Image (cartoon, rainbow, N blue to C red):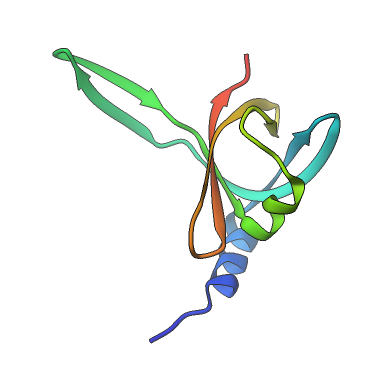
Length: 102
């Protein structure tokens, strides 16, 4: 069985997506994506360390033409984030790893 990745992405973003503002230079660009903030735990040197790595998943077709790079700012509601890593997949989506903007 095959599936249409673009149609699936559209359905998921249409149901759970929210609009954020991606800043490229001084230009504000609205972009729809899905925000998640999974909690990860690790043991480092015998000490448990909890870490939250927020991610905003967007359509690659929406993100790529904006020419955004790591270090760009992304506003989601009243929260500001910096893009620290850009991870495109082979199904038409790009995950943006974020850090809260200080």
